[in-house]
Picture 1 (tube, helix red, strand yellow):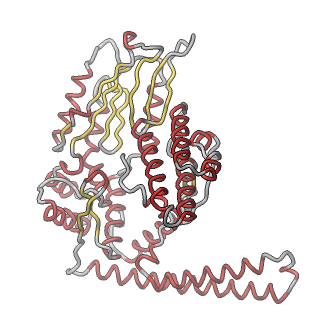
Picture 2 (cartoon, one colour; picture 1 turned 45 degrees about the vertical axis):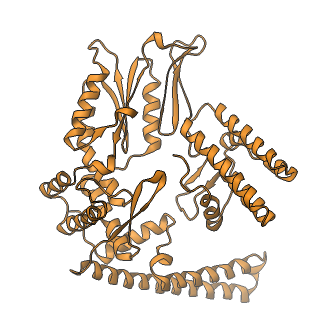
Picture 3 (spheres, helix red, strand yellow; picture 1 turned 180 degrees about the vertical axis):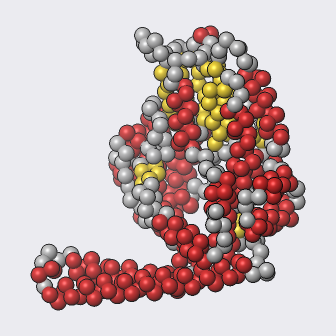
Length: 462
């Protein structure tokens, strides 16, 4: 039996899990616990200073001092843990009271789309996280993984057989989901607890009041992604069973069907029609303007050795013949939209520099260099204990063709020269997109620096 209770024990599991991922919930919700964390860091710093001396182990007074500080740290950790448990118990008691309700608010997001956020209370935060856990475990929901989906497409294209590709996009995905059908499914399945369904209804009722729509899920609220995956799980299973479908790959609302060109000659249009019918059953429609067809089997499409090209999940896949190779090969480049985003961020970085250098030249120079290092290199995510990294390589690791990175490097040099700053041009010589990708160049940034870097790129093209 899955534990779906909104108890202090389960909230503590969430707290510890988020802490391992680098999210400091203590500073966000429990300032007293955060103050104890500061005490622990100060004491740890004192130990590091003592241990900096090579012969500290030979001096009894220093060894005793270190042992004393370690004892104090252990006591602080125990005190902090108990304080967090007490606070989470208070949070759980408030959640289980009849007066508690989850409240959400609307705000403007990227691309002019409305997104929704929960109120900043610890009660709403832990309830929504517990709801995500309950949905994931009860229905075995696995969130789409961009890298895995792109790997599947590349693997399917690498074969020597001929394929057709249909790329579908669901129109107004989150806003079109049939809430009534979704709630009926949750009730009829009988898998979720009564409390879980009550809180889900609270979120959806609040969304209806804010949006004025009787359909859809609140974009930006964590449980929406899980509920959407639940709605489309049956669609995924049905599409995979269609005759002629070699691979069905879906990343949120972006769907790719790779079809076999066999003796049955199943038309891509008919398979697309079946997929459209399955989507209509859950209240969703295909965006015809974004539907694309690609033929990877017709020799008539051969242009300079290239059989077909299409973009998906930030990559441009090209199937082509090279030299005397019998089997075609697949090249993967960074997609055009992503290149546009990098260009936008470069241009915006120099615009900010040009605007700020008349006020404070040193600070403008320092921030520009930091932004360019971030763009052209890689960095470990701050506070993330899983050693996750991001950057020009780690965001595009499947790419095996990097000519478009050379074009970015040329634009970077042009933008630097326009500033007429010899010092800037000299510093930028060591920063190259292609080098950062191929050599996996790393740069370190603290939380404050990362905040300053990305602030200027808010709502960049996607």
